[in-house]
Structures are given as C-alpha cells and as structure tokens.
Length: 291
Image (cartoon, rainbow, N blue to C red; front, side):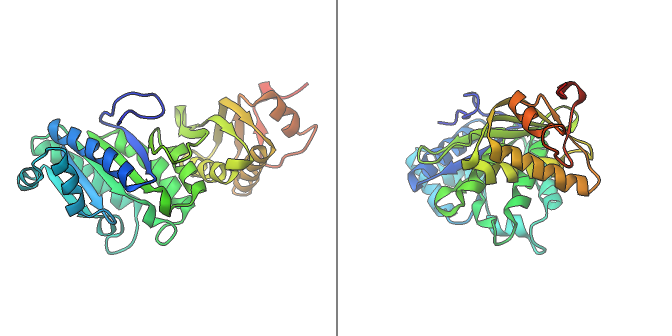
C-alpha cells in the first residue's frame, strides 16, 4: 500500500510524498501502514492532526494490533496540532518550517531512532492561509529540504475539500505520490533538475492547464535567474500548454529573466519560433532554431 505511484519502490529516508485520499477509509488504510512501519522500524513517528484527531489515529493503531499508548509514553509516537505547527504565532513561514523539520529529524536521531517519519493534514492551508501558487512553490522547495534529512515526509490532502487543479499541481511537484483510487492522477510532473533547471515530463493539455501554470510558476520561483526548462520527457503538449509557457516567458522577461526551452518538441518549435510566430520573452536554444 505504501509503494510510491511514480516508480513502485518502498519508502525510504529523503522521500517527500504527496498523499491524496478521497475517503476516511483511504486515510485510515494508508496512515495506519505508514505509522506502523515507522514504529516497527525504530523511527520516531509524528502526525500533525486537524480533522483526524489523535484519538482517532490511536484507534487506527489499536485495530492494527499496536500498543499505541506504549509508543506515546516512550516518546516514539508524537501528535501535534497542524494549525499550531504550520502557522505558529506569525502565520505560515517556509523558513520556520525548514528549521522545524531539521530540528525534529536531528533530535529523533539524537534520541536513538533511525530517523523521523512525519505525516500531516495540509489541504486546509489553501487558500485561507496560503495562496495555492505559494503553497505549490513551497512544496517544490521543501522537497530539497526533506531529501537532505533522515526523514520521510507524507503530505496529506483530503480530495473532498480540495480544488482538483491544486491537487494536480501538488502531485506534479512531489517526486512521489500515494493517490487514492477515487482521485485523478496528474498526467505531468515538474521537478528540479541539474543546476536548477526545471524538468517537465508527461502530458499537458487544456484539462490540466491551470495545474500546469501553478507547477511551472513554482518551478520558476525556485530556479536561478536564467531559467532553463527541459522538455525532453514531455510526451505531449497542446496549444493551451504552449500558451502557458509563453505567458511565463513574458512574465519573467518583464522581470529581466530569460527563459530557455531545451529539447522543445518539433511541433512546438514551429509554433513558437520567432520567424513563424513571435513570442516575447521565450528564447529557444540555438540548436533548436528552425532554418
């Protein structure tokens, strides 16, 4: 059940997973396995609660044959209020979250555990406390933080209370996903590649154009000033997706940033090549120019 959607492998330290569930049963099944594996594997296990209370999660573990009270008493199992953890006294601050992650993972190892296994309820943050664009950017950025720690991060989203476009974008910027059977899987991914370039893979069409806009914007915000977008893994992109690339190019160009498209699909080059259809702010790599 905890095989990652993207490549089927088991979870390991450094993994940052987008977990989307569409029912209470899907929440119970995945979270019980996640917590149980951590407790049995000598990891400190942390759950940030909001809708699903600590009493309810403890009952999950009891039904799975785990003595939850013993783990609570030893400090191996920890519950924190999600609002207090994410918002603190001054609202949502990514830098404060990074510090908290590092401190919790380091402390877990210092206390004799193999590392930290943390799960959270997250969808409530948008848009009441954080804009969707800012939170998608945060999730892409924090992936680098988690990857450097003895930690597994499971970011939970209840599909029943979430915008479908936001969920597609959030899936796209997580390197791994555990997705409920009732939830649509993102047809594309946006990740950080070599030297900060943005790597786009999969398929992009009009049905996911808003999600593509959010994910691509997050990638641009986390990338160096000169943005390189690698499209080698892009299997399909329609006119709406190309429009999104053009709009991003114009926006970044107005800020003095250049955009270079690497491995641009042939049909996209024909549409976007300046000699055919001028596109402000989008620079194709010279070896992709049409003669």
